[in-house]
Length: 64
Image (cartoon, rainbow, N blue to C red; front, top):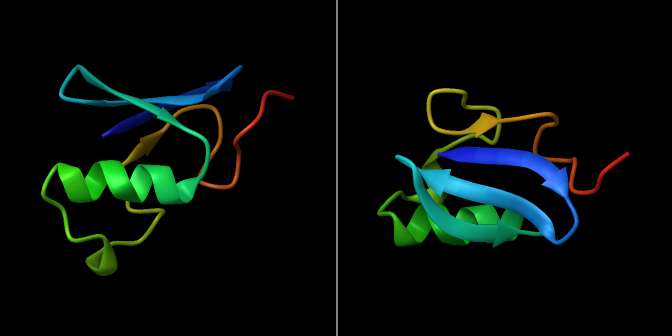
């Protein structure tokens, strides 16, 4: 899963090139993960094998 850089309207989220939508917070990313079949209770936000955070990690949601 790729969480793209922050922009107006949140961060775009894709999985294998498919656009899943926009995330405004961690909870939105967790919802996308659950819909994709991942058990969100069993991962860490900094798990780079599961989520690629571009231009900011899980605490960055707005443009500078």
